[in-house]
Length: 210
Image (cartoon, rainbow, N blue to C red; front, side, top):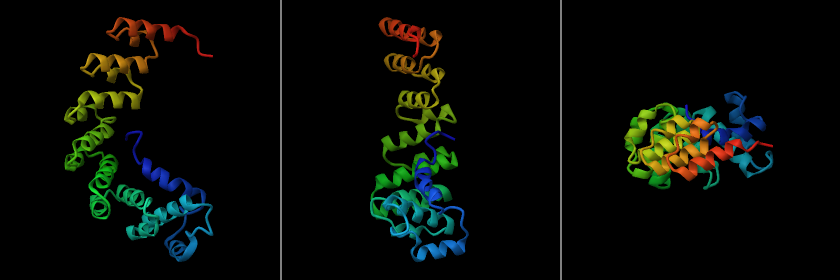
């Protein structure tokens, strides 16, 4: 799984864990629905929203997300869709908000299922490429599906901190930049084509870290 996987879910659930929203059974969830997630019981609106998000997932009821603030509701729907790996919930986001919100949801579900075919359902090329980049951390071949493979390789290299991925970049300037940023050994710097950048890279490695 990629490092950005379930970022929304982790964000939504972190405060819920701290406030005791996670390890409760369904009867306790029903009690919470009567008022536990209201602000008078929790420290701030963020905790309230995350409490509702946890309730939605635990009770398998996405409509609980509707109790959240308008700005937080899309994250709740996306978190629910990702946890349940359910694209139908993502489609509801397009009806409630816009296509971009739906596309973001598709990306998280694709990542959760490790299924690049879901990326193909995204109409916007930029978002589709984002989807491919997210999955490519587990399978570099997916970058070949992107309209900008070099960008995909660069993002994956940075995510994995792997200079070998940089070498797959065809554009010399982009490849050099990738290697320069990630270089930890002289052999990494020596793969840089541009003389000044290569020298600067080697010089940086020789400067002791204090």
